[in-house]
Image (tube, rainbow, N blue to C red; front, side, top):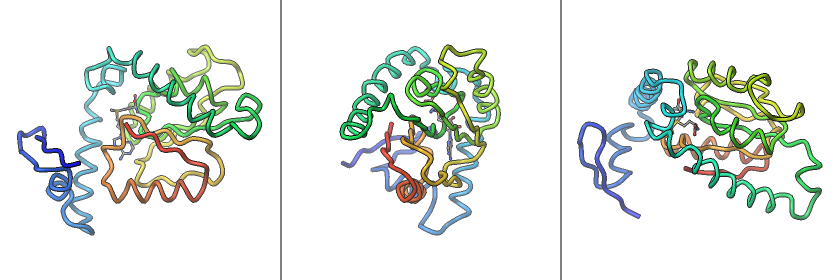
Length: 199
Ligand SMILES: C[S@@+](CC[C@H](N)C(=O)[O-])C[C@H]1O[C@@H](n2cnc3c(N)ncnc32)[C@H](O)[C@@H]1O
């Protein structure tokens, strides 16, 4: 579906392809692509590490966002475990991509997964996530915890083989160039059972 739009400088684009061509150049133009990633991370480095910050000033949607994500997650889990042992009997591990301050891990993933790893390139977000997800600050049982905090962009991250039951990407995938998203998806798909959740 073709959708036109404006960027933050008011430039008009006929569709997403035109926007990506302008932003990251033709395939193989690494310099332009790196500039795109630097700009994206540079933007988030200047954003307050709070729910309102990671939701672009719309912190008020947090509760609804978590509720609808939970409904979606429940569907996925029942699809995944319908014919095997029930999810509650298994040790489940999730990866939260572009996790920001750990909003989704804290409010949703940790209630369903025994371990959650976070990948996030902006260090001040990840530091706040580590504090927010400290077992002393959250009300989940002892066998549910945030395990690893990786300060790295998704395009450079390869999931550990066999570790993850679900790879969760929420409000972050638009940051990745299409070819890097596809490449990440392939790396993940080769290594674990994967359900991508794009938002
Ligand atoms: C809109 S925020 C969403 C944060 C979190 N997923 C949530 O829903 O609360 C987008 C996040 O993507 C992160 N991000 C930006 N570029 C990224 C990249 N190349 N790889 C992974 N994450 C990235 C930002 O630092 C930011 O934390």
